[in-house]
Length: 176
Image 1 (tube, rainbow, N blue to C red):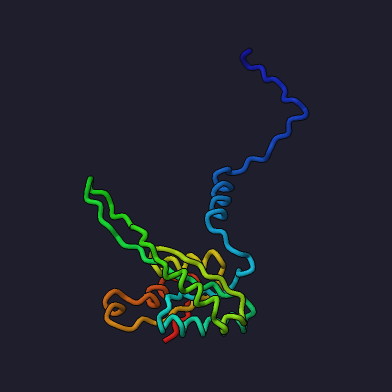
Image 2 (cartoon, rainbow, N blue to C red):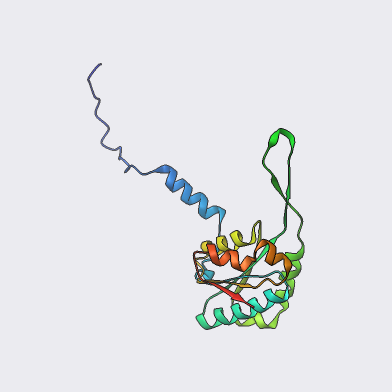
């Protein structure tokens, strides 16, 4: 009947209106980036096994020990751009198998100097600066520690440390 409203049953409870998209988005974000809460507010360090990254790791270990926090060691795996010419599609990135992370993990697990602090090894793929900052954001890191880049490649393309220092939302410590 027009204009007639039927009463709702008394046992039906109305739920408060909430934005389902925001709660679903938040749940998806947490599921996509699981991080161990024991390492919240830890120290993130970029590590690839080079001499400069070893110095950065040594400094980060000292920082984590002094602050009583955990150490998040990040290795960014290689990704190679490949251009797809058919249909003028944008370039795609292909993950190249990188067994270096496994080797680094084994080396770190056997290292005596890491026995002083709790640590985890995180592997990522993509742009080094973006991934270090992303891990720092996920863990609410107090700082990101990186080694400086020496050589012609760093001068031409810009060093990781320099690019990270410009865009990071948390302190960046560059170890020479």
